[in-house]
Length: 133
Image (cartoon, rainbow, N blue to C red; front, top):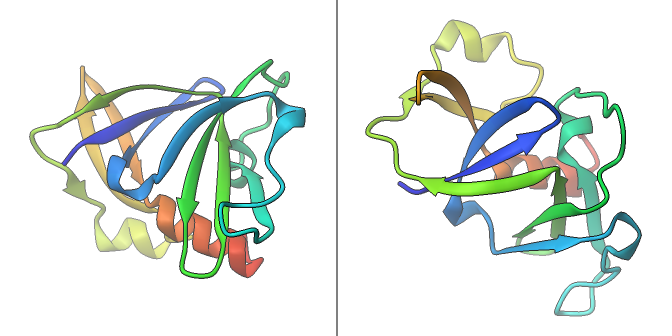
C-alpha cells in the first residue's frame, strides 16, 4: 500500500494514497468554493482537527481533495512530501483505539526509525461533511 507522508506543524503522519482524489497547492485565501459537480466544497485544516495549534499560518497549503458520495472535502495540510511503501502497517491495539477521541487512525508504521500514525482520511472527511469534526 502506498502512503502519503503528511506534515502538520512539527508532526508527521501517513495516509493511504487511495484516500486522496487530488493533491494540489493553494494559497489560504484561494480555496475553491465549489467542486467539479457545482456543489459547495467543504474545507478544514487537518492540523486543527487533530488538535495542533498552528504557530503561524503557512504561505501555501497542500490541499488533499477527498470526494465522498454527496460532498467533496478539502483537507488543508502544511505539506505532503513523498510516497512510501512500508513493509508493514501495524493495526492499533483495541485498548488504544477505545481511548481515541475519534476513530481517525487505522494503524502505525515504523519508518526511518520513527513511529508514524496512519490516518483514515476518508473517515475524517466524512466527519467533516457530517459536521461532527
